[in-house]
Length: 294
Image (cartoon, rainbow, N blue to C red; front, side, top):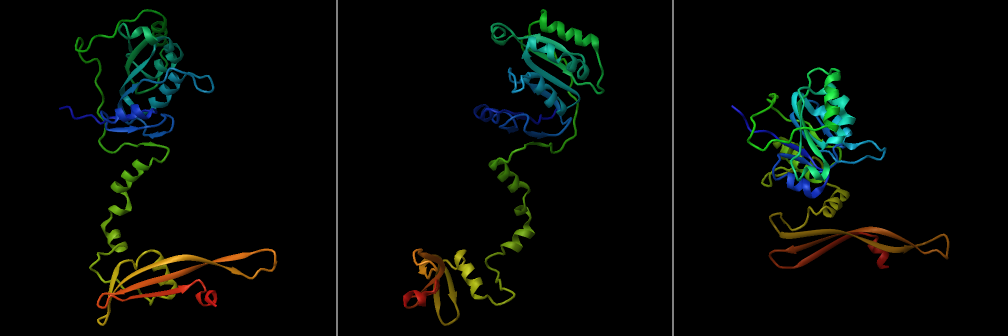
């Protein structure tokens, strides 16, 4: 019985990455050289690298082949799509790491654009030098190769190995906010009910501090918005409370008469609305109110 395949992809161009997400299960929008991928994690590697050179004048086709090939499991199938002339540079590597290779050139008229071919073959379980296979690959780069068959005209050429089920290391080396948020929702601390209950008890539970709150504690609670729109009832009065903290500044004495110095102070303000009488009462503290008013 054949199960549904788990698919992964890497695409540096954002629009193509968005299209890839429509057909693949997991997609990283970034460079293939800036990802963390588990070794020997995949049974098939579909590799269509850029046809270009890097800053050191090294061909990117070969760099992609050697870097991504580590993620292919022994017996896993390589599908390598490159200009046919570029096979020469990778002939030694391919012959040592892959076996039973087959090469087909693209059909016309697509072949005229880049001279592309597709190289197919399973990864060797043990790396071995294969001079005859290397010579064959070099011949494919220069001589004639068969045209890629039409879909449905040939049967399966290779069997893919079965891999162990479970999560696979496949992540960008850079933090992507959307992926980080999704990971936090799935595996973060907030998924632990016991921790969430300790940090944010249900509203119906009465929470009492271990020690009486000092003025500084109350000021911090006001600044954090904990006293906004809450109803306090001591059995005598029932009030609606709203608090805030603002910055005020005033001039202070300076040692240099030509220099004007101002200091900032925090002013805590709490407004209470008596729900029975409708009378407002405002309490302010801080900011040296008495001295500022004199």
